[in-house]
Image 1 (cartoon, rainbow, N blue to C red):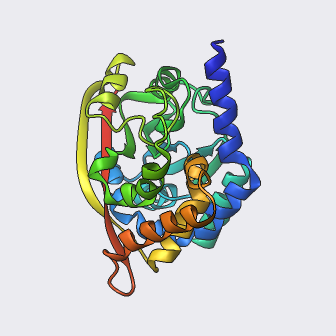
Image 2 (image 1 turned 180 degrees about the vertical axis):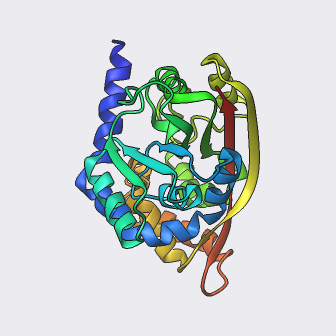
Length: 285
């Protein structure tokens, strides 16, 4: 195994399975669900869900959009929610129970080694997950294997930073001061599939048909103050933590202040209606 891949696997697993990360996602689950309504609807639109379908949701986190997908496929359908982290799945299970959603299963699994038989699902979805699949082609081969013939995979990722006030207000004040080197093009990172056509090319290389890329600017309405939005981002955006923690003292305070001030421009007194660049890509087996 290429040593870089094993190193990346350890980084991704350490970032997304530690207790602090899980606790942060659990704490903010309700507001994240409200914030990402437009992303969720775009993902569901492209997945072309129908009642009774079997859906695999990868990197489900605490349960959004898996819970809404379960509602859409109805009691005759079923959603299998998966994540690297068993503790994330525990939170997803609790949120499903609180919402009285019973048509779900919860499986801790790596996207590169899906523990399901061939043609087990009509749809596969993942929101903001594929950027962190270390060996993307291996993961896509597994997705293709578990989908029925004619099944659809729908993946959602961040678009370019310079087209996303949501992203730039978070990282811009820190990046201006630190001038960090960009990660390698295929390293697991938030903007890995931001370039136009990159995720389409990956799906085509994996043998998927009829790939479609939808690039949109959409509002991510945070139901709270700009300060709260910043705190939430710091707590849940684990891969960005080294950037956020790369400054100290007055410089760090100034960068945080600029970030909060940037979000304040979109604040109506109740909600921070800041737009983000979102890419949704779907393809058939």
